[in-house]
Image 1 (tube, rainbow, N blue to C red):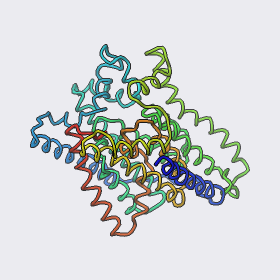
Image 2: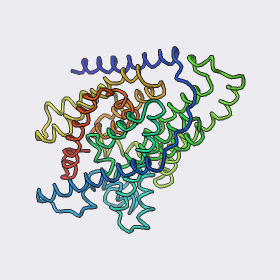
Image 3: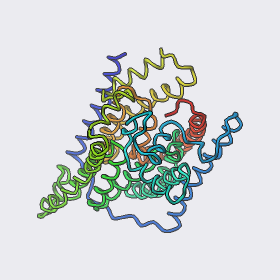
Image 4: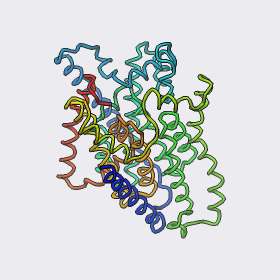
Length: 412
């Protein structure tokens, strides 16, 4: 199977890179777009949809767990798995005598926001939910505006719907950093698309302080910056006389994105004396180091078919991850053909990086953090029956995974 998985890796990523490169050299995705102005009613509806959807899902999970004999306070229903790590960081910091520096692998912006809000609220579980829900609401607004740059309002609504109904959307409301990362990523790319590059880079830097893959936002921002000034091969005819000067005047702002990662390394050094301690903790305590997509596929398949897990956990964790690993990679060539170069190249790099850890347990959740996915789905299902089928499928799977997560089953 290893040879077969290597062939999939080469075929999927190789063809996607080739298609994206061909588009880069032959097509012109255009310059910066005009900003989208949303009315107060539309913004309120987007916020309302996000907040109501999380409230309904939380109540369903709370009721379901109570009926199953697991009585927990409503606000703690989703305080499971890594959520507990974020909550401990927010209330106690990164170190404790029992676990040492094991939590240093979690990036600091989300728990810092929870800590600040908890000062006002005085209840860390409610503070964490509030941060996640508000970030998700903001992410819906920027996703809607981003989709409107390339499509109509119907497609923008589909994109938001698919985000809110994604099968593991429970993580968008639970005390996890996914909602914050999506908000910052979407806001970053939206500002880059509309020519506000300093703001885009600042938002990218904050995303890099939220999750390690946030630094990859430098890819779409750089490509949008090149396109805005006609400095891509396909857009060379649009290049103005002072385009190069303007580009190099604004290009240093790109350093703001890796600055987020640098701030995290400085925090590591300030707290532990070792800027790279998180890498050792990832390897020693979390059994993860950087590998390859084919290796992860092989480990996932081997564990699914021969591991000691019970059937429920095999299907929820390893079965789901296998489907996502295959679908995520095999969808890349289609994205490279249809989407903007900045979108497709980001998707290629992001998917490879998040699927490369040697002992991957959260592939489904990490894939959900790919902001490109939701406009891509919205553009791909323009036919009514496809839209309906995908919506129904997501709507059926989302409460299943949310309930499983709430019960503490292996949904990471």
